[in-house]
Length: 297
Image (cartoon, rainbow, N blue to C red; front, side, top):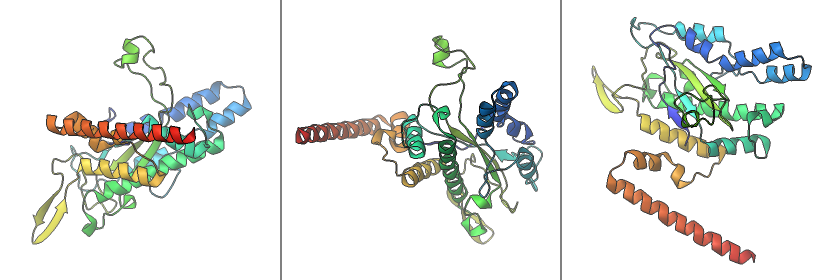
């Protein structure tokens, strides 16, 4: 399932400027720039230049670092000094999901983003970027403020940044088992999206927090009734459905968020029911596999 984490500080203090976080999220471009500076091959310089990633928002694929910092830092009307000024959701994908997207982009199995041609790479990025925008449409809708004009991503102030690499850390089991060193790049496809989204909507009239304890409820403000809150589980489920519908992805039962959530957090009875259901589905697939094999002989 696409892992939609509603908040991550990434080591930054989100009660101040987003400048440090924005600079941090430009790290892959900075590493590519180092490769450009040390390369004496014109073709490699051109390749590295084309692999750089810009920030994107609901309308543009190319937003500069300065513009991101300016728009987030100046969208904080009536927020207190200690209030969160922005949040940093992350959207990660499973290896099966990334394999599906890479085959859509290249028409073949791809082991690494370096295996893409420039044309395939652009298509792969577009697929991920389009999905990121859908996720932020769901993010906006999940606050239940449609009656106040908050409907889709363009009603927010947000910026996304695609990253294609992850590095091993000291506490990873691969490092502990001495298979890799801390700082080594992880093999395979590791593409994901980091997002910076302002605490305030674009009109700066609403405070929006995806980590509030109030998940989804009706509240009276004066004589008016409002349905408010951010249901994180609902957002994850909608993002999963959006991925499957948009990319025509045939999700296996074990991949589903609902199943994984029960296996991790459910009661013993719920876990047992899920395991029985998975066993029946496995038996059914085995029967169909044997039947198809017999018919082909």
